[in-house]
Amino acid sequence: MSENTKNEKMEAIVSLAKRRGFIYQGSDIYGGLSGTWDFGPLGVALKRNIMNLWWKMFVLDREDMYGVDAAILMNQKVWKASGHVDTFSDPLVECGNCKARFRADQIDVSKCPTCGKEGAMSEARQFNMMFKTNVGPIEDENSISYLRPETAQGIFTNYKNVVDCFYPDLPFGIAQQGKAFRNEISPRDFIFRSREFEQMEIEYFVNPNNWEEAFDMWRKLVWDWCAAIGLPKESVHEDEIPADKLAHYSERTVDFMFDFPIGREELLGLAYRTDFDLSNIQREAGKSMDYVIKGTNEKLVPHVIEPSFGVERALMAVLSTAYTEDEVNGEKRIYLKLPEHLAPIKFAVSPLLKNKPELVAKAREVYAILKKKHGAVMWDDNGNIGKRYRRQDEIGTPHCVVIDFDTLEDDTVTVRDRDTTEQKRIKISEL
Ligand code: ATP
Image (cartoon, rainbow, N blue to C red):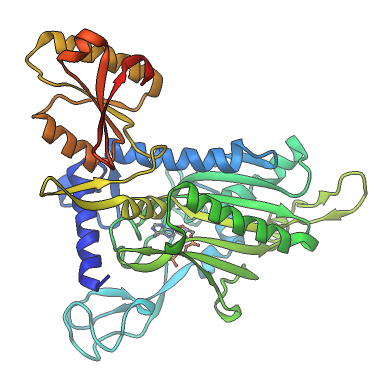
């Protein structure tokens, strides 16, 4: 794919996402707020389907996982102990000519990407990406807090609570989904890099002797996850981070990259964080993070394997995999070939003609039956059937059910398949 085709595809996805109620620019009505996105009725459905699938795969279906939902605002000591106050920063440069600001590691600093001026870029300075706020009515050093830049710390601070309440066998994991905030210098590429986003993170606590085994298990599970959201194997790539590029807390990191329309970029990360976080908490909070191995007196601070997933990047990978153009009866058609379990709407129900009360009444009956059974069912009687199909194709609805005059005679309906556009007559009772 050439650069142009890639960008055209990205633009087509952004446009469809807006036109069909998936994703809007945040605060759009006031001119927008850079790096923020609002999910519309279909976007929130798709996002929840992705998040629920993750929760099912990694929490509900497993014996060794515990879920938490920690507060976004945390004691400032959390972010000092974790190293975020001192080191969670990106190198910022500013163009002396047009004043545009960039992340120094993402551009060629010899020439301003905005105004083209050469040699005008300032020296890089470290810019901390945490959003700062004050908790309570007094604004002083003691009331400073931050919007969490990752969900992981809410897991580490609850490790002891979970051990005390449940005393799980080692290895075990704690999972959390929720918002994270980063004051990115240059948010870009739709929802790929935003300032407010969602993460799904797991801290998997292991005996340090067994970290490699656990790392390999999670590596495999990440591939299972990619398959479960329908990403083609050949579009996902592992990137082993070399020792000199590892984050300060990591002894091994494999980034999972995806071939987005914007290029090959990070989809999620898998890191061996050692006992970095629990030891920091132990030192700074003065509380023991020891785990007593069952049936022995042996104590240890567990080490941690961390698979860290971004919801928006998963959603963007799903959308760009699903986005398809083809030709039906000589006309260009756009459709989202979403896996059925992720599709925001499973069935659309229409009367063939909306001015025939007997058809509408029967269609309402079918709609009620399907709605009760599947929940994600849409009533659609806008425009002619061709337009309805086009609209449902664009939002990825796998089945369109049409009620016509034959239905009144024999209780069968037409069911049209999104991908093949084939239509079949099926008994209502078999839907
Ligand atoms: P990048 O190198 O792309 O900035 P990162 O390595 O800083 O990402 P992590 O801190 O490992 O990212 O965060 C884990 C996951 O959270 C990422 O793999 C990504 O899916 C998601 N994520 C991180 N930053 C953002 C962001 N600004 N917008 C959307 N998702 C993000």
